[in-house]
Image (cartoon, rainbow, N blue to C red; front, side, top):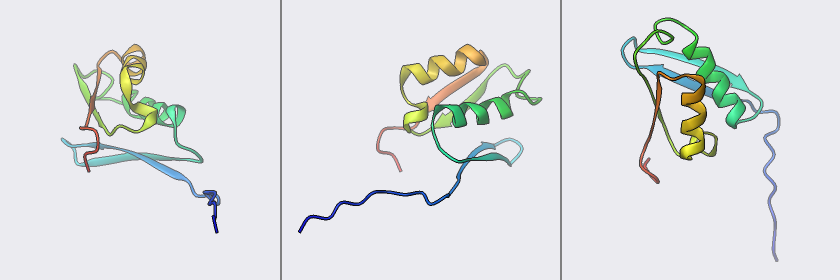
Length: 94
């Protein structure tokens, strides 16, 4: 007997966070979905605040999730925030 399973979020929200290692501060937001737009909303929330807006470099260390993987994601980030640098963790890293 074959049984298929359909994943249903059931109204669960995604919680996206950014962590400032220098200030030991977590910034976050919730979204009904994950993806490019919610990720860029988080980036915008952080990068429009001081001291990030005027920093020479702000490093975004990200996993290889589809909303922020590949050259397109890196280009999208630096086009909107030239001082932002996306750093990917190794593929399959825990």
